[in-house]
Length: 444
Image (cartoon, rainbow, N blue to C red; front, side, top):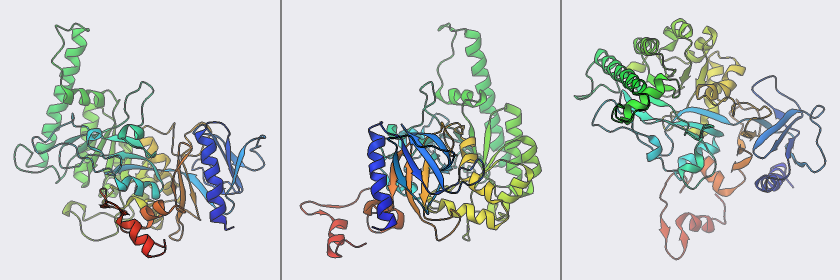
């Protein structure tokens, strides 16, 4: 029996044990990259009830009787990837009626069965920030998801301890929101409109405070201002699209003026103003695009962006902006960042723990530590090698992707039916892809 078949069979048994919520499961023999601390040779990852209960080497993690053991010798285990900026699920936020629409919720527009969610699982992504677009100054509320296998969007939600749904607030500046009225026509007007709305939100807060719960004195409910108040109170992080160095500084100016928490996204020119970003204590989530083309405002983008920010002391994460880059190749971005001067440890952190910190989820995911969610990957080799394949993806102790499974392999490698959310059906004979497989003897 081949190692891959052995791994798959054992993992299926492990999954059954997990679903029964009974026995702990230990993955043994792999090199473990915990992200916090040094890699562990001949490691042991022990999980139960969807959580990590222990991680270490075979000498320090003792296995009790009854533990289900999965032999992954020769493999690499690392935390599940966290994508801080994506558009999977086909969701959209604001429309063309106004440039500022914080009341729009991408939650109400995501198709939980869209195939690009499965493709993200194939790319090792276990946690994701799904964003509305950047064609507005404020395009709505983002959504933080765990990429569990789910029927409906509620199955993927991350909830706060109080039951609230986790997510941020999407803002943008630069060329994207510049359009005909009622949208702004200049960068100065863009900033002015944002200031105006945050001032209104402050006044809304004050009116609520002065009312002291008296319904006769409370202002009329305003869903948009409510969201801006959440940002002002630090309960909702502003996830801000920006590229040019002067646009970056405008965001920092607004952040200082109103005090909201912000993550800078894309920041093509960040290498020009790295000291200012570092002084503001603001993290950056950047994209690495290695093909020509794009907007004029991104013309000075540099592969060294991540390295320069890291050296300046900025918390740096990477993202896919899927479909700008494909979620299946997220680890490749970390490799390109290292090639351009970022440290290996920093690059691995940039696709895991750093992004979890930016989303306020570092207590749950982003590293392999006892007490955190059992979100992890099993890889065929070094995560930064182009020859390495993600063999399995696990979310909260449940396997959501297995390269050995024909359907999962289809999402990973492509082929008819891999990207169409509405596959054609042939009424009495199964679907067309089944017929193609049958005609080829079941081979893809």
